[in-house]
Each structure stands twice: as C-alpha cells, then as structure tokens.
Length: 163
Image (cartoon, rainbow, N blue to C red; front, side, top):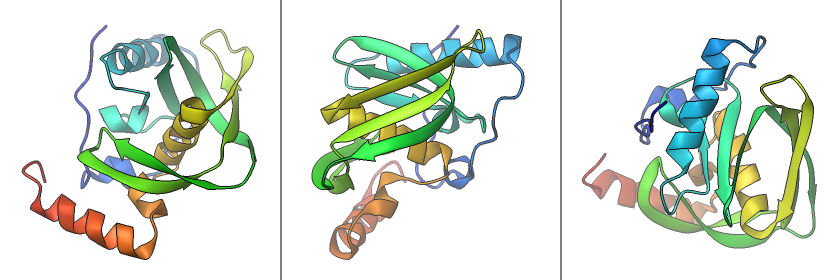
C-alpha cells in the first residue's frame, strides 16, 4: 500500500472520536497496510488512523523493532504511578513536553481475522499505547499537559512554520 501523509494539529479529524471498524473488508485491510507503512519510518512509535485522515478505530505501533497493529483498541489496563515522560507527536512536529503517563499499559482489540488480541508493555510501548488510544478518542497529548506546559506548547504551535 503506501505511507500516508500525517495530519497536523488544527485538522478537525484529530479532535474527532473515531468510529469502530464493524466489518473486516478490503477497506479495513487497506487501512491496516497504510498504517503499517506509515509507522515504519525511523522515529515513529505509533500512527493512529485519525492521523492519516481516517476516522476509524485502528492504530499501528513500532517500538524496539516490534511492528504491529490493533483494530478497535480499548485501553483495558494501566498500572503504576503516573510519571511525566517526554512526549512528542507526529501531528505536532518538533514539540516535546513532559506528559503524564502510566508506566504500564494494556490494550485489547482484534486483528484482521477478527481474533481477539492484546498488546501490553512498559516504557515506550506503554506510552505509545496510551498516546495512540488517546488519538482515537479525539485527544492529543497536548490536552494532557499541565497548565504551564500547555500554554508554552500552544505558543510554540502558533509560532511554528507548519501551523
């Protein structure tokens, strides 16, 4: 399939909750292929369907060489004390801010065969699972920032060349 262009902050699709994928058909298979192709470039830990302009509930991930996808993901479990971790986003290029995330996350959903699957992990994988699920719920990591960091981030967005 193809690597798709990433939608940037300000695009309404990024703030719109995604619809579940009810039928595994050629459209769903094509979406998953595009998500996998779009997450492969270096420096990408995850890509949500909304980030490529598709308002359906699916994302891909690429952490430590483990590349995969999940359809209709639900953040089923988080564990540990919330930590502030440096986080960025392909839809908000060039910005990195301390974002509150749990150190463990588990997501459940299905694969292209309709089989139930789960993806879980710590560190960057836990962060990516939470981040991509947020995207599908219409939330950006900027929405999770504390007041001072959010103010600074929004100023940086307004002054960016891409906004």
